[in-house]
Each structure stands twice: as C-alpha cells, then as structure tokens.
Image 1 (cartoon, rainbow, N blue to C red):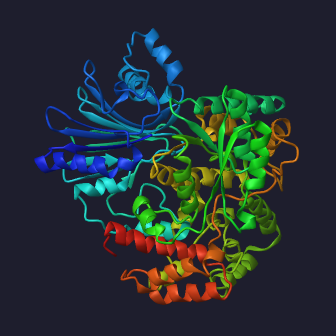
Image 2: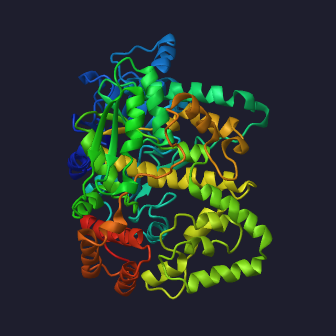
Image 3: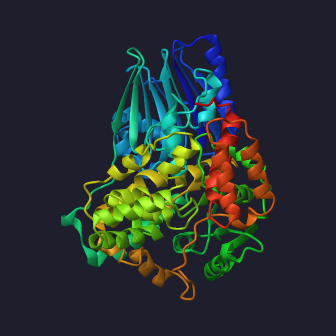
Length: 619
C-alpha cells in the first residue's frame, strides 16, 4: 500500500518544491521509501510513498518509468491477478525486471492503454503520465477500496491519495463545501464527487479520468458498474459449490505478500469464513487478531473469536482496547481529511496500530453484508414495504410529519417514521441518518429544510422493483465506499497497515451480483443464506453466526465520563460559527435525559476538530 501525488501544468519552481511537501504529507501511507519524478519539460511532477508488500527490493520502487513507451506510473494498491497477467504479457513479448505487481500494471498500460482496466483485478488508485499522448490517466478500483482526490484550475491539475497532500499546494484556500456539509450532517460522510472542501473532488469507484495537458481539459468515464443479474446464467443448484470455490480463490489471492499477513477476526460469520479458508490454504499458521473492550460485555467478542481461532489452530492475539483518551480525536480529525462521523474510526485505528506490531497486511470482512444482504435495515425495508401497502399515503405522511416536528432527535425509530413519507426510496434515504432535514436546518440556522441529500439517495436504483435489492444497491454505491472502506483505509494507513477485503474480490463481486438472485441471498427475516450454508460445512457448530455487531465502541457509556466532558467542551467552547451552539446545547441536554444522540454529538465534535486541524474557513 502506498500514497501517490502529482502536479501537472506549467510548473514554477515553487510547485516543484511542493511536490516534496505533498509526498511528505503521505508518509504514513508508505514509510519504507519515497520517490519523486519530474518530466524533462517540467510539466509533470509525480510523487510516491512506498509501503513495500510485493518485491521488497529497489526494483519495485516508484515512480516507475518505461523509457521505451515514455510512460510513468504511480500506483497505490494491489493487483491480485498480477501473476497470470504477467504470464499473458510475457507471451506478448513483455520483459520484466522485477517481481512487483507495479511493473505488471505498467506493462499492461503500455500494451493495452486505458483498456488495461479490463485486464486487472484488485484494489487500486493510480496515475499514468503518457508523454506521447500528452495525457494523465487516473483510475480507481471498482468498489472504491483505495482513495483518489483531485483539483483542477488556473492551468494546474493535481491529484493525491489524501486531501491533506493537495492542501500543501496552496492552490485553494480551504473553504467548506456547502453540498459536502449537507451530506456529512445527513450521513456522516460526503457523497458523489464532492468533499467537505470546496474545489477538491474525489474520483468515483469504477471511474477513470483523462487530463489532456495541451487543452487543459478533463474527461471522466465510468468503466465499471454493478453487474445486472443474468437470468440465463442462473444455476441455483451450483450456487453453494461455486461460492465456496470463488471465495476460497479470493482468500488465496489476498494472502499473497512478501510480508507477514494477519486476519481481523471478530468471530462473526464473514471473518470466521475468511479464517477458515485461509487456514485451509496456508502452509504455516494463520495469525488472527480480535479487539475487546474490558468491562463492556456486549462489545466483547473474544469468546466467539477464540472459539474460531482454537478450531483452526491460528496464532491468536486479543487486543484490549482500553477507554482511549478522547484527545485522540484531534489526531484522527487531521487524518480523516475527507471526514467520516462513524465512531468506529477509534477502535479501527487502535486495532490497526496494535496489529501493525505483528503484521504488515491484514484481511477483513468488508463487503459481505453489501453483497449478501447482511444488515438489519435490509429486513426493516421489507417490513416497511408491506406496511406501505396497508396504510394510505395520507396517513403515512401525517405520521412522518408528526415524527419530524414532535419527536426530538435521539428518539429511537424517529428517522424510520419520517421515512414513511413518499415511496420506498425515501425510506431507504432515511436509513442510518445522523441529522434529518429539519434538524439540519436548525443546526445551520436556516428557516427552510434542504432535502438534497435525501432526494439524491432516493433516486439511486429507482428503477429497481425489489426493495431489498434497491437497498443493497444504495449501500454498495454509497455507504460502502464513502463510509466503511474510507474508514478502513484511513485508519489502517495511519499506522502503515495494509487492509484487504476478500469479499470485494472482483470475481466474487461479479458472481454475487450477476449470478445469485435476491431470493437466494435472503428471506424476509434472514440474510446471507449462501454464506450461512457454507458456514455449516466449514465453521464449528457451536459458533453463533446469527449475532450481528459491527466494530464500534461503547460511546454511550463513555459519554458519562471523560469523553462526555471532552465533547461538551469542544462543542460549547468552539469558535466555529456555522453550527448553532443553541442546538448543540439542546442535543447535549437530550443526551443527558436518555435520548440516543451520542453518535450525533460525536459527528459534530469531529466536524469542529476537522475545521480546526485543517484551518478551513466557514460559510
């Protein structure tokens, strides 16, 4: 895993110096080596920070340049099919000087051009400078596991793995983006191309971008979308055997590295299946890691993880996540420059930091819930769909309005009641919401509600008839890349740990969407049906695979102690002027009265600290 950066334009001496600053801002993503390359015409400067995973020698260093083709590459990620792709390229005359997947990617571009995207499988963000074409070619992987940000203006184009690197250029004065702020307050992350900072954008998952240096123009192209179910390719009798084969191959590919590899094992269904298949593929002992919260029984998954670890004979490490000091949030607010409100960034970072002492790469279970219908709200949506058919729209609208204006934030079920208004798209739009439109208006001191985030989400997959399928598509296009994968990437890379997700292997993703009907993924009450059947053959029978708890921390109980005092102090003493202090005080008071606003207060705390850390001007 690495960090990449670049500046393109009529580069002045100060810009050439700033590429060094950009690279240094990404040091945590690649502590093993740094590299900077500047084109002879001084139009292009590429920078790279390296975390050595494949071919640890200097032969794998970046930026990597092919003099014959006049192509330069900076690359962040892993190409999992690089060995088979290398063999194909060698049969076409390519000659290799290293064992790295980076060189395979470079040769693939030299052979296929932009069509190399249809030959590679993996998690990645990369940039090619093609001197003969006079272009910069950027791309991001299909599911959005690796980040890529860019800016364009005043004759300069720049890109980087993280926003903080772009801010080193001083080409923009950091100002809050209004659209990004609405998104963050609604869902706890920004969606679409926007970030929280005006004039800095992100490349979408499955998207590529070509910048033409001569014309100073940018062209976007979607090279991948979620596959549509193929009715002619459905063989339900073979789903289980095919799933085991494809998932097993995915785990095997994700274990390939020239450094130690571990597994994040919660003892839940997804991570336990990965552990089982890794143990079957490995010739040496598998290393597994589990986070536990001492004294917080419902958050302690160590008995389940220990059961799995013992069954497969892994080298197992339990990492106690003590009640961390709240001032850790200042550190995380700087790292999460494209801000995320999920409080799981704290345990994820602490766990990654501990794992990094034993391994450089770790496998996790991201993607299983999105592919196989594993979230509680997937079944709530199905219940809501039935409810809508029985309650007239006028009555549902009345209920929604009552919840909107009468029930205070933090009332359990409030957002679901508000979601009864309109069609099922509105219900989906109100899932996992931090602040609804009316509450956002009060926070921002407006006399009207801006519902653009909800309307945008409600339109996703609007032509999908099945409510469960539609909810899953929304999750895959939004919450997965913008929330969960971004959380995993930033938290782990802050500790220089590479996280991999076998469930997001390209072949498995294609199989899950294209060949498994929704009726074979879930019933009205239970999801992940193929995975559960696989678990019966691979996992210990005494393991409870029906429990569902994502990585989180006991913030509600911590709120009564130092964390609560810290959050109140940050929010009430803040000099920021775009969030109403009166509404903040109201949310704190409601929390003290027993309403569940701890996640909302955490989100506002992170926003305040983020603004301070990055010196972002207000609206």
